[in-house]
Image 1: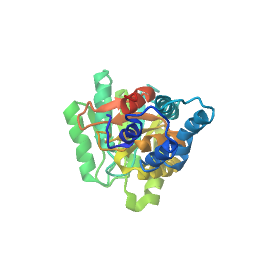
Image 2: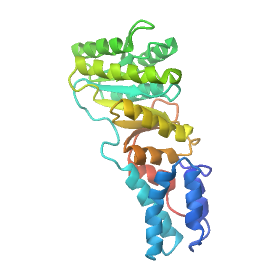
Image 3: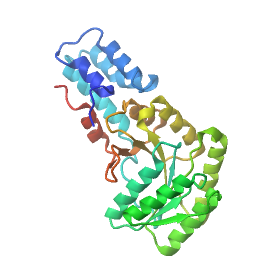
Image 4: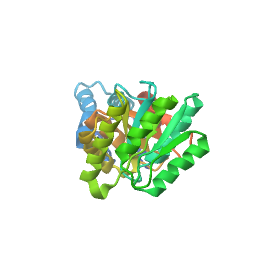
Length: 295
């Protein structure tokens, strides 16, 4: 998961070959963070411990500065509720939201694979009724991994489809319901209203549903991903983030910005195209994989 050209690769280059503190070090770190989609607020938060440590003469060399950055990054990402979905009810209803192209449907397929491997009975719901391709993709995943799919007619009301699907899952005793949704940016206000309606419909058919509302964001879109987290978070009670496409092309900084500014835990990270390439998020392991040690 590490990369030399991304955020953490660029940070490592600042420390390479020297253990002495350069007077410009903090400024250089700040520049790297700001140009790596970390954002101004999170950058200042990350640098706070470095500045304090330098002022108190507690950071005597670059190794200690590096460790301070790693510790603060892990602190930002280690939020309550992070990591894999826990069983909340039978069925556990998961609403997947996000813009088109972020990887919602693929993430649903990967999640279904994970649950299937745990012996759980999964129902995939084709709630993006406006794109025939989305319905077909959900059906293809169902066939590929051997789980049930609930799909309404093309153009059907998404809230009605998801309402009926959850009722079906209760009757058929599915363990997990993974609901796809539309993500049309060109009708943003309509999209948010539609998602609110879907959320209300889920609550009507099953108390406590949806038990998870996961926002899927493309890690390569930088600050745009942060904006998406803000906007979707205003419309629905998000329970976490799934960050996709961290396969060596993403800069990575937006992970920190979303967690810090929105207080949203990262739940899963997509690192490839295979069904198995969706990893449960663990803050310290993630930071270790990205930053490693200053060697």
